Amino acid sequence: MSLSSYKNAWLLTLSNALAFTATPMVLLIGSLVGADLANDAALATLPLAMMVIGAAMGVVPATLMMKRVGRKRALLFYVGLCIGACLVGSHSLSIKSFALFNSACFFLGASNAAFQQMRFAAMESVSAHKSATAAAMIMSGGIVAAILGPELALYGRPYTAIEYQGSFYLVSMCLGLAAFTLLFYRPEPMAESDKRQPVRPLSQMIQNPNLCLAIFSSVVGFFVMSFIMTGTPISMHNHHGYSLEDTKWVIQSHLTAMFLPSLIVPYLVSRIGIRKLMVVGLILFSTTIAVGSVDTSVWGFWIQLVLLGVGWNFLFLSGTALLPSTYRQGEEFKAQALNDSVVFSLQAVAALTAGVAIAYLSWQSILLICLVPVVLMFVLLFKTK
Image (tube, rainbow, N blue to C red):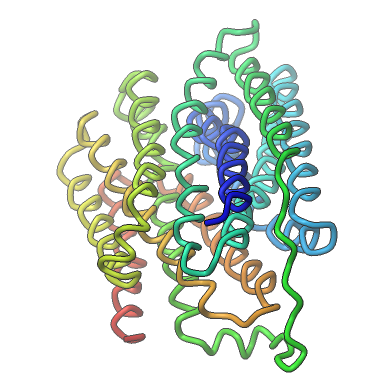
């Protein structure tokens, strides 16, 4: 990795770590605020769902903007949008507006769609055989956000007379630092497309089974993770009566487990390969379901959510690492947009249905539902050998 590429990758990692703090903050307090503001208990997780819907709907605009004005300018724009969303979120708490709070969460999600593109920016700044390492570096920045986001949520909770308003102010400061860091980022020039190989329509691109496998690996990772994680704060705090501190600890541990394995994923990919790493991720998901079916103590939730986080990391990074080998030069923006649009759209479905599920089903039933995508992923893996 050249000095320039090394600098770019680390700048993007630091910026991503700071910008991503908004997401774990909302993951911890979003459903709790929703339960307080909503008239119907089944709508408590709607803010989390709106954040995911925002991410799903924001993928294509973010990708098109990056293609038109470049990665750096687009990322700076979306950091500004995220700061604005935080300020709107804090104001919604002042006027107790559930609709405005959901709107703020939507634009936080739209910003997150752009921040997710940082992994592709880092991968573009290194040679092809280093792309998994570059993606893992960006993901490792999530370790900082996983710890910092929930801490800011609780530290800012009593910061003003309005509960959690200070949390949004503190995250806005982190986003300002993320923007400052991006000023030093120097994007690599995009290679010219080979005119002898025109960009294919999506209908042709998706005929590649490895492209479908790459996308589905990320889809299953996000769907199962979101479905279980979205319902965890309400299940722990409201249904089982555990303290907010215990709930925060479990969510923080989960978020840390989502990103900490990124430090060793490049080594695992080189040793066992992408497909076997996907299998390990599915086994971890299956173990999560088994543990949660028999143990709903604080430690039981902790074990479930840690296994869930590691499994998500293996599936998501495996899919991300496989993706660049499934499209031609010049098709990167189209393939990346397709990947993230499908991933975040189905994650939105998971977040939306989780709110209804947690209101009417037992925790064990929620976990058993997650067996369906896990089994489908196993089948796809064996069929694409």
